[in-house]
Length: 577
Image 1: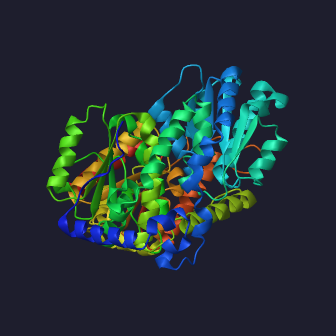
Image 2: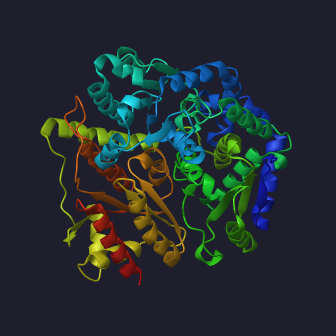
Image 3: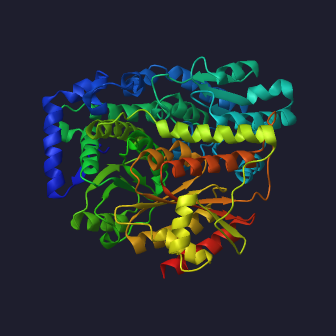
């Protein structure tokens, strides 16, 4: 077994700062105060916010280990029912850990295969529906508040589809709810006769909920070894209690991240062994939502192909999570080259995928500590709410008028339209050398300066083909501009990195991608469709970015998304030539 040791390679100036901060944590008994749930560790030490009510994750593992019988009973029930598929209907903290479980542990024989449905893109919803036989499917509706738009409309759609397949009287037996006590979803689940209701903990925020029922219930449904999973999580808890700060992997990592941020290294790039590649998607939310606020933020960078040291600026920290049984030879060498070039590198090595729960816990500790070092409230997400409010305005407007507001494009050429607000549109039109897609993209990319980052926000179906097409031009930007690059699919990133993009520093240059819908899907009992919802979410997202003065360009493709992405990629290639 690995020791969960954090291996560290830091430049001397950062190493010195970290040593000073570690001494401060030791002398101020801050580790003891953390586990005593002392709110004064955050918000510049004033404890003036509500941090103390969001610290239930600190002792959730011990509580879950005391409830193993419930998870065993659920596992047995699902197996006995003969379900072949499980659809997790959720968003953000309710879906990202289950996605890691699904993609890391795979399908367990005799148990349902776990699928994640966390999109409002109609093509993606339709694909999820077509992928399963609902008569052999259990749906897990995961919504902490019970009022989040996406899980609610996904529940309405799949419940209606289930009624068509198995009848109104039987549909509820194919549904499980995970929600906080007293939520709207609890009332819905009871009224609709759900098979089970499992409760969240009101003192645990979504992004810290991986080891609560939001992670453990899907793990049990999918047939994972829950006792082993939680026992490994307990190893992370024990490691986080290590009294010597420089030997405490979670606290030391948090101090490094916080001090690096304060010194200008505010981009955190993940590399992993291939078998655990999806861990980065969970880490993105944990880090971005926790730290991106008040003009500060650690911007997470996931799924960037590793490059030579020369393609990186001096604003990065690199985190490498290794699975020792994988073939890491090439990746090890490239990470070693980054450390040798003077970049900060931190590494965890695990020997088995069942050690991931310990990694979850240690990163939760690290991010809470980093927020303390940065002087922020790690546990709120004010700018996520701003985008939700804008979306709600637009869907309400559509319900009343039957249409979404239309805007004039700043360019309409070859079936692709470009949109920006008046100020940024003026900037692009005056700096573009012509009126082609390439000209405007070149002007947009020219806005990227040293220590900025470039983020593609794709409100389209999340498929491997679409991701590969965007990744190809993402890497071109990274290599040409030597800046960090990000890729998020909407609406899921709204509940993740979207907090940092809006509440963090104004260092992002954004390319939003939208498209016409070749197919649309109706939502039962609603006056709008999934297509309208995702369009409203994209518009709301763009509006908030614009309100915050972000450099944001929207590219609207036709209904043939692959064709449009190829055109876009070609134009970006030409713009960077």
